[in-house]
Length: 170
Image (tube, rainbow, N blue to C red; front, side, top):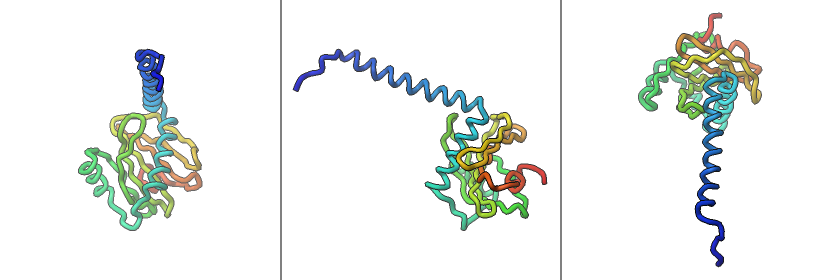
């Protein structure tokens, strides 16, 4: 076997350069997510798809907003204020998760609205500009209520979702 003729420092510096590029890209993505409601909505739309398609939900055992908030606190150490859907809205809260996004962890509540998969992501003390996007066959809306920002992700064909979730008046 022939030993490498490249000095050790050149191999290390190539690795360091690659690591620096990866960190720069990750940092830029994190910075952009914090400043762009549209990018945040698109990123969380992908997470919505992952959670429902890969992880699924327990739609046979719906929970109340209070039970979900307690689970967020007890299992994940997160305080997530969830809206209370009106009884006539057709929304069932079916699971909660803690998901990773560009800025860290985010509270993710999974619902079924008239049988369709709907996600509500909750950011405390991180106000975002309102945004409305269509991505990956889904409609994503960024809604701020006081100091809480909600990102609502639903099938594009489903209308009245924000109302059925308790996020806006009829």
